[in-house]
Image (tube, rainbow, N blue to C red; front, side, top):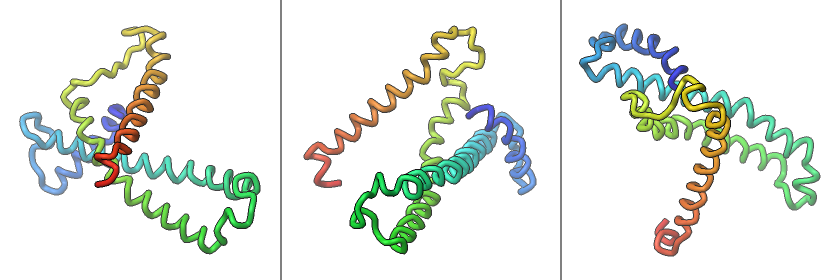
Length: 163
């Protein structure tokens, strides 16, 4: 994400300067961090919207148009078209409203990147090709395992009833 933010950061800094905010280019104030986080939030939000509106139609067409009979074989399995239309509209609306908040929740992790406390690298030779090729696989295994255990923990009787 850092290279994308660095591309758009001057535009956000210029916008702050145009609004009369002083010290955005100065490293002694907190304003460079605010500009960096604002840029990150915008990149995450717009990126989520672009990804959603480019990939979701493919999924909809696959399940509800091309393979409707396979995934919804009986007439009782699929609601009438007007109900389906309203449900799809509601799901799109909820997704679009959720993206800015999900982007906001990821911003604390950008602080590590801003203060150069993260572990990303730009040179493949620094760790080698094996590490470069295995990193995405290790990340997915770690992330999916974590999500599984969090989900399983939410079904514990102490948490399930109150939630």
